[in-house]
Amino acid sequence: MQTFTEKALTVMKSIPPGKIMTYGQVAATAGSPRAARQVTRILHSMSAKYNLPWHRIVNAQGQIVLQNEESRLFQRTSLLREGVEVDGNDRIDLNRFRFDPMADEES
DNA sequence: GCCATGGCTAGTA
DNA sequence: GCCATGGCTAGTA
Image (cartoon, rainbow, N blue to C red; front, side):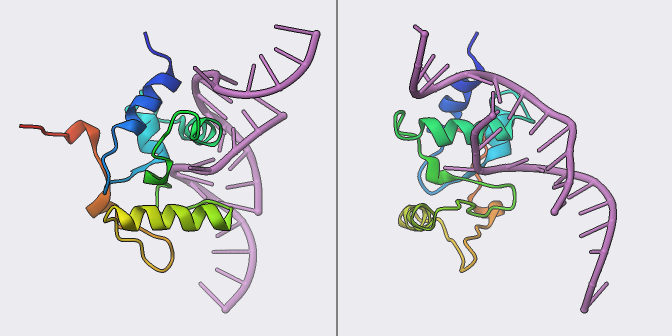
């Protein structure tokens, strides 16, 4: 049995470039729909160590929410480089760029 | 105790 | 703006 943290790490690492997920979506996919907050804690403390694609995770409104100006800009730039469209308000169209692991149909 | 949420309300225009 | 929520891979002893 994997812990929630381990499953969350796996989920986050599975997000392909050019796609994004929300905190809540990661939590739900890892088996705990209400543990969005825990996902933020994981990202905050383990991103560097585990090489997580932290920039591919945004809030439920599809918006970049980092407090730190520098990090927010870095997240924005990273997403743009991968082909994700980010508007002037740091917002992303979830309908177009959300990654849905459940509907991940490989042929 | 921490945390980069999320969803629902209250109060203003 | 408020507050219920959930799981704990960091650092000390």
